[in-house]
Image 1 (cartoon, rainbow, N blue to C red):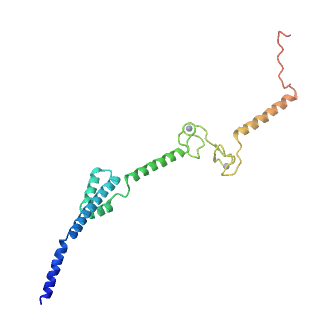
Image 2 (cartoon, rainbow, N blue to C red):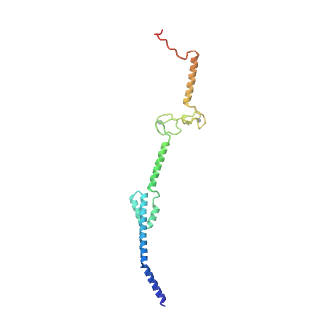
Length: 196
Ligand SMILES: [Zn+2]
Ligand SMILES: [Zn+2]
């Protein structure tokens, strides 16, 4: 019964030959090189990503170290604990917030004379005492100067200037009527002493 022994010896010889063949050595070396390149590449990626997300250089160094050791598991640990936002994201969000704040402060109603903040229901500026709105004649709601009608009680707004003009015209007409009754419209020039 030497056949199985010789067969196993041949197999071992074959295996030995395979492990020492040039093809296997090349394949092994290549995979080792690939593993090292992949390991260093992952660590480099962790370093780049940490620099985009972390401001503190020491923490970036610690993150890179975690990406390097333990190999392959370090980058996964880093992924679990890295900051969710990049520094660029945070900066652009801050800029957006600032722009929004500025827009809000600009669109807030203000006194046209002294620019101090004025609420939409102010009748007058509390700082410089400028009249901002007139109260509705019926419901006393503050009315914007351009409004032709009170939106709260639907009372038409009589323009103060127009009222004044109407009153002035009426009184003028009355004066003319009074004048027309007896006294001449064009005032007579006083006869000068030299003419007499
Ligand atoms: Zn004012
Ligand atoms: Zn009203």
